[in-house]
Image 1: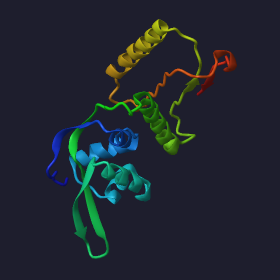
Image 2 (image 1 turned 45 degrees about the vertical axis):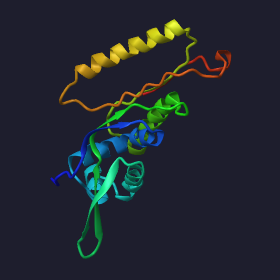
Image 3 (image 1 turned 90 degrees about the horizontal axis):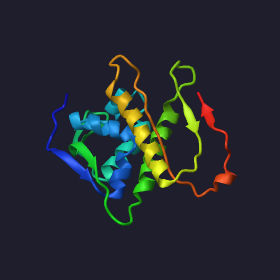
Image 4 (image 1 turned 60 degrees about the vertical axis):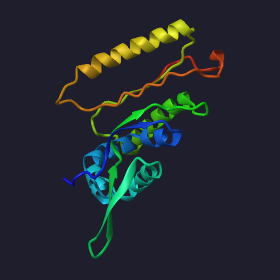
Length: 192
């Protein structure tokens, strides 16, 4: 393992561009790896079992917003290897600013999570996948109750994990729509 150079313990992400770059699932995984050791794009690609070209734009996005740094260049005779590391061991999101749309940021993170899953999904892998899309007309009190009940269920299953089990991503979105309730389909869309 390569030694970490100067690195802060925790970086608080307040700027919209940093938060957006961080919230992509593949970039979060890259940052976790780069917090432990410096690594080239090719080295990270081996860990992810993808072609380096599939990670180049992620490295560029993280470097552009200051979440990773180029820390070493090694000329091995054929190529110039560039080693990167995360600027911090941990990242905390605390977005600020009147221009920052926090609700859009949440939905963007969910979209990125789903996009990453779409890129890697295999039809015949034998693993369970569920898609559910439904609509409800709720008052504020009912919306809060639904969110609390969903959160309780999530907490129950995330605290009782099976060390031998498959990792599943739970991606839930709950947001108001500007489409009239009378105009939307009333049947549930359920795909397994």
